[in-house]
Image (cartoon, rainbow, N blue to C red):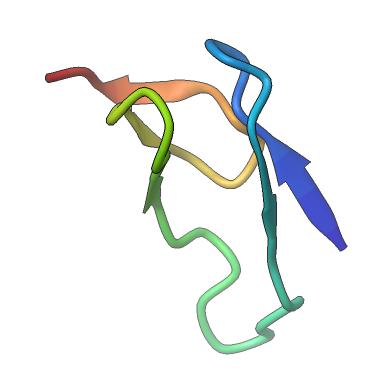
Length: 44
């Protein structure tokens, strides 16, 4: 499964982790912290 950054459209491959499905990730292209749906949580 992959999700896309809603800011710069970069994609991230994610595994469906049943333990913590709501982990945030930092987009390597634009540097924003995003949720599992690709929406900004915080920005730099």
